[in-house]
Each structure stands twice: as structure tokens, then as C-alpha cells.
Length: 256
Image (cartoon, rainbow, N blue to C red; front, side):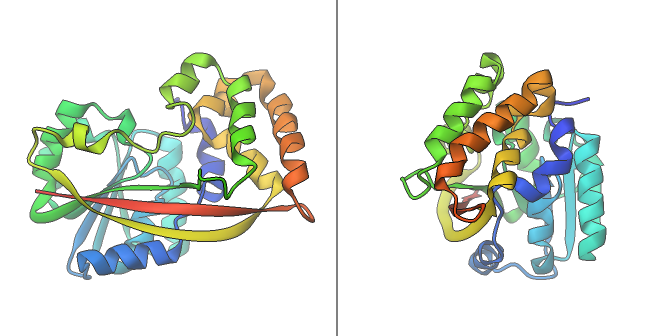
């Protein structure tokens, strides 16, 4: 069982969402059409793959965690999209998977081995295609005043080694210029969409369980105690049991 197996049932609904405006803006920027194809690496429950589904013709999702692929399969059926799913990692993808107009990578690049990933991307990306490094996260500029304390509580309960591996709870992806330096690719434009929504204190508290460093598997018998701590921290920021959250969704376009 992988480190995200115990988070699959929560991940799809509780992580900061990618809004419809995000997919529409990126699709317009790239000029996506139903003749195009897209492969989502580290697809998890298929959030990016299915979000871009209305704008391309063929979508493929790749993930090493069977529980995540099961969640993606259910989400695709519910959305009415044909989604091909492959269990595995980008580094070990079969060459016969083909080339794609768009390769998306969400909250996964920091888990990938640089050299084999770059070599595989060179074959996965069609001649005039693009890579999208995507993220959606709580704004860290003070507009979410509950956020710093929220992460502090997670840090206190998370095993130190896992917290460090997860990038101190704030990393959304690697240093992209450094990651692609010396390769055929380079970052170009950045698409940013900001949205606001409300989320219940209960759901925001349970979101902590979707991170590898504070997953049920990582915390073991301490999960309930951490949830109580997080809930107590969030309570003063809530009104009628809900909290306002400003979300920043980004897509870094990378091209040859």
C-alpha cells in the first residue's frame, strides 16, 4: 500500500479545488480542441484529467496508487468522461503509450526522479505540445488568516521525516527552472486564477488527512487527537461553522 492509499477517499473532495474558471482559462490560452489529447501524470482521483476533459478528445491518467485510480474511475463514470487509467509512474511508462498535445502534472512533480522523468517527457510531449505544471492552494499572503496556525498544528503531529519530505507543508512543486535546466523544455507563461469559497470547519479539519505527512497511515493512533487540535485552532475563525478560503490556482506552461 502506497503512502496515499489512506487518503484517496478524502483527497478528491477536500483538497483546495481547481475551479471551472481555471480550466477554461488554460484551455483558451493553449487553444485546446476536441482533436487534442492529454495525459495527466500522478493523476490521483483525476482532478486535472477530468477538469480538462471537456476541452480535449482523449484523456489518460497515470498513478502508482490503485486506490487513487479507483477514485478516478468512479469520478470519470460520474462525470460521463472516457478516461483511460494506467497504474504506474512516468519513469516506467511504456513507449507505446504515444505522444500527447498536453501533459499535466499537479501535486506530483516533487515525487518524480528528474533525469528519467525528463527523458520520458521528451517522448510524451507531441512536437508542438505543452507541459502544464498545476497547483491549487490556499493563498499564503494573509488572506487566509487561519492558515499558518493550521499548518503549525499539522507540523506538531506529523512525523518529522514525512514533514520534511512533503516540503514543510507548503511546497506545490519543485524549482521549475532548475528542474528543466539543460532539457529541451523551458517554463514560459504562468496562468493564475484566484477564487474564494466557503468550507465547513469539519471539512477543512479533515483536509489535513489528505496530506502524506498527516495521513491516517502516517499518524496512526494520533489522527483523532490531531483533528481535535486542528478544529480548536479553526473555531475562532469560523462563522456558523464555515470558514472563508481564498484559493490560488496556477498552471505553469512549459514548452520546447
